[in-house]
Image (cartoon, rainbow, N blue to C red; front, side):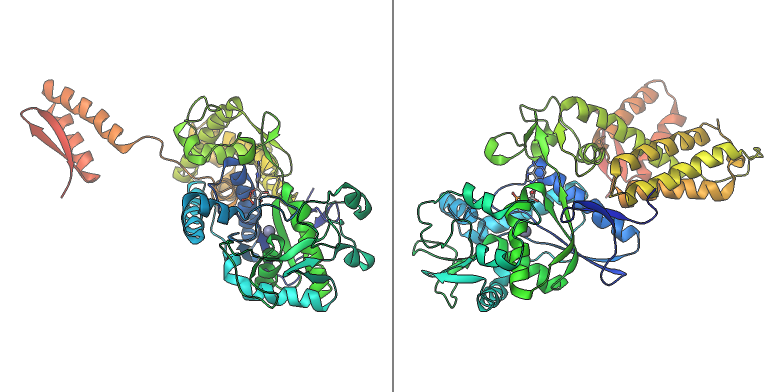
Length: 495
Ligand code: AMP
Ligand code: ZN
């Protein structure tokens, strides 16, 4: 089993032992959201998957510089350089500044990441903040002869690049097949070849987001921003680059071509791609109309939802499958996840409350071996390409032992203090730090106070003054005071 971290590398199509360029430092880049709409649950899956990668690398004591960008310009409606800029289009529709759209959805994205306990990256750069660097990289690609200017736009010359390099090596496509399958589209006469992609686009007078460049007023192509920001913050070759599977082509394929074109070297050692969240087997996507938002999930207010689900239930649901498998949304699966999550979190509370005491139990080597096997299993599963599904399985085995200790079916003396400490710390660390699952307060504190008020009134009615005083004291210690009014009993925050 995996003693060292192994990662499935989309570039080589193999699992490889992870060897960072400059340990203990690790550079990791993940394509962030295009901020023209709210993120849906599919997007959330991808960001949770990389959150766990980031958390686990940190757990392994790597010093990770995690860059996750904000795409705020250049992502057109279509992948083949046609259509409008997604952000500019929305700004026009709503009669707002494009940067108002960008800010609104960036704020929304941050709220969602907090909701799902997704850690912030080390750097969150935006494309519009790096226009100068993008112009520089375009110039370098032009100087190297892998791009050409046409009517104020600059296109990457794919066939020229392919003479010496391999366009399609990430997505395992063959250039000739791709060329045969590309349509000549209206307005593409600027290109020498339909497969060429824009690294700079000239802007029409009514275009909202444009900058001055050596080629006139325009804006950068979508694929360029990630190459530029990855290079700027992580170097010409860095360790890990990730994104959803749907970004493999053309986005990541183009990133590789741009970097090799400019600097003559592969930009990334390990390419990681997460698989899609699907609904009835179809990719969840805004354009297909089968997506829902985190708020709809929590309110249970979408027709696909039987009931509300909490963010941690959803996080647990997602981690129950490996990031590279598709995951189909279903109410049954989410209801099962809700139960599983609660069992795990009840275990977490117990684990944190247990203290070792030598209760005179006889040392039980069999139980000790079982516990050690599951502890090793947690590490090995995560080392095996971040297999969270298997890790959760091992955590449930550990949970059984923790519950037995709690109910005293298993004596602490039977496992000894060292194993006990290892059991508790593995359980707590893997749940909280590695998987990022938190205890969620599902009960509203006001509901709890009101339930106590019922007991209080009852006690008063029965003249059970000991209980009355006890409830008063308990609530007071939580900053709540009870008020006996003519109309009944009410409560207030202690001032
Ligand atoms: P976008 O804002 O559309 O660029 O998407 C942000 C991230 O979410 C990208 O890495 C996409 O690959 C990913 N993504 C989009 N749809 C899904 C989905 N249904 N399941 C998982 N990831 C997705
Ligand atoms: Zn990207």
